[in-house]
Amino acid sequence: MNKTIGLVALSSLFAINTAFAEDQKNTWKGSADVGFVISNGNTDTTSTNAKVSAVREVEKWRHHLEFSSSSKSDNDNTTAEKYFAEGKIDRKFKESYYVFALINYEKDRFSGYDHQAVLSAGAGRRAFENANMTLDAELGIGFRFNETDAGVTDEEPILRVAADFNWDISDTSDFRQTLSVEGGDETTITKSLTSLTAKINDNGLSMKASFEVKHTSEVPVGKKRTDTTTTLGLNYAF
Image (cartoon, rainbow, N blue to C red; front, side, top):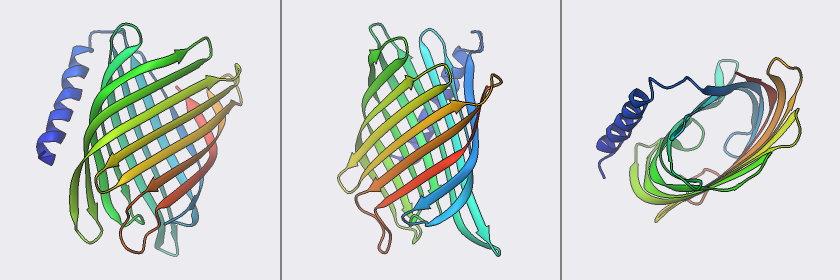
């Protein structure tokens, strides 16, 4: 599959769907995070981060957008630098089923890769829902595009399996666990994110702690397979 064609196609899908929903009520909800990050693996350092995520949900469509960055410099030497962006569209059907299209892009200066990107589509289902818990499960196929720091490029088809569990523990605290596995012939990437949020006041401000693990089965020479990130900071819901 040609990389450019794939990216243009998915961009067009986002544009068409956004235009289709323009006349519907604006129901965007989101949050902004700032905090301190403790990284281990290919980067062993403490840095600062910023993250913005938003969800727009209407009767038949659900949009997800996310952007995050973290960096640190010591005496004009960069010791940590990472950027991540993701967009996802869900088309909902009856009985909790939906289909999705997803694209993400990651640039981690110390991972051995200049960048990594995923283009995926598939089906999902809200497997469980009650007054304070939801569990979504997804299965899809797609392509992963990599370029190493040495300029070596690689494209491979992948099978993507993912789950997203949300629990409103109380009126003031929330728990979330996400897990994704993207398996290809050459490389399998597994990501896990665990987070806990506790409200400070009624104006949308909360304390947030999260722990993220990324395991890559095959990495450039001299790099580690597992990276962990612990984040402590503030979250503002809007």
